[in-house]
Length: 193
Ligand code: G4P
Image (cartoon, rainbow, N blue to C red; front, top):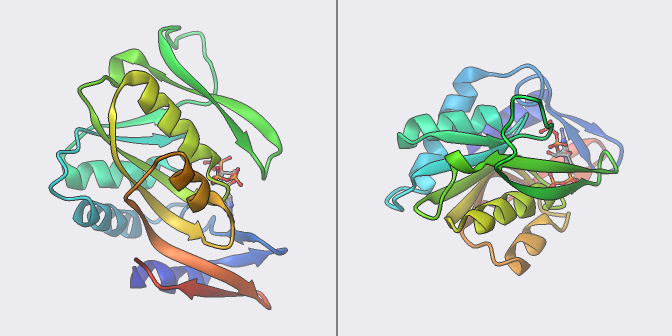
């Protein structure tokens, strides 16, 4: 998506060998117009697939997922990472290991919000090691829901996330920007599929 690539070039900052900081429009401050355009693009990429629900993981997946849900006209459920006293125990759960934070989080979705009748689209902000995507897949599998595909805002193609997702049986993965490499602090994009 040209608009997203342009924004990454303009506002993204490369940290170290493999991290792209995009907190001015995606991970901290959010650009609603860009999110809306991305939601419309996800809806175009996954049209005619009878999607009943969009699933994501808090926190940074929520903004693009909500905009995708708005464009598709379906509810959005975000898996929660923390257990609070008001969260029901009747939940699907999965463990997600974060390589960047080097710790595991349990993610959970209340059983009221996901069922075998659902056709779900998985959305996330980054595809790096694929752990978040695998966690969402585990929740959907536990519910008996059908996964129609996965929509990613920024994929780092030089990391193993896509391969891990494919090996786990996920198909129909579309990213809005694919990063092939970072060279001297510059972002090199891959062609989109
Ligand atoms: P995964 O997202 O593919 O599972 O890979 P990984 O375990 O490496 O990612 C852990 C966290 O770091 C995820 O966020 C992911 O979105 C984020 N991340 C991975 N690579 C980058 C990057 O290059 N730039 C930025 N900004 N984030 C990256 P999270 O822990 O779920 O955080 P949040 O959603 O609460 O913000």
